[in-house]
Amino acid sequence: MDRVTPELQPVAIYLMPQASYSRAVNMNAQPFRQPYYKPHTSLGATGHWVKTAGLLAPLVIGEFVKDPDQRWRFIRIAAVATALVSEAMWTHRITKEREEARARERERHERA
Image (cartoon, rainbow, N blue to C red; front, side, top):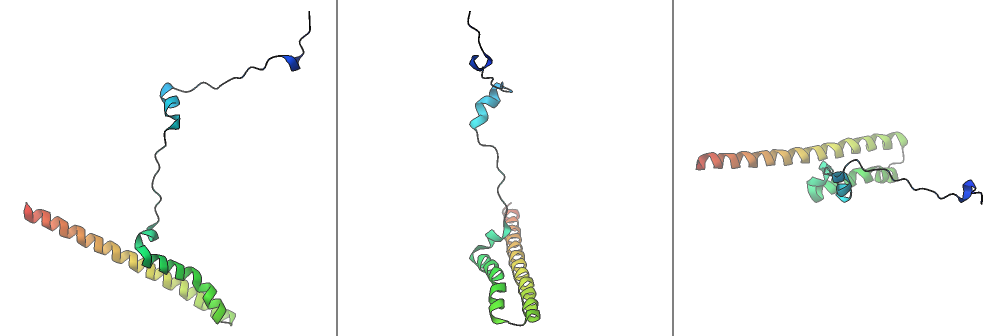
């Protein structure tokens, strides 16, 4: 009788059992994904240009202003200014949407 060494023994493949049949069937189904929320994208082209100006401001300021203290001051002012413009645009948009919603509600109440 031949001896079987451990290297020659057949290797068993063990598969992990599935938790349930429905999970096994739904493994290929896409999970629910919450949409990514980026408010600056809903401001349109103007919002895009404001953001781009804010990003490029330090480079442009660095090219034209040679004094380091003055350069740092202008960069801070540019950062605050672009943030204020962006917030003002967002506030204007929200205010306009709320006014339109109120107008629609008034029309519904007048019809009823």
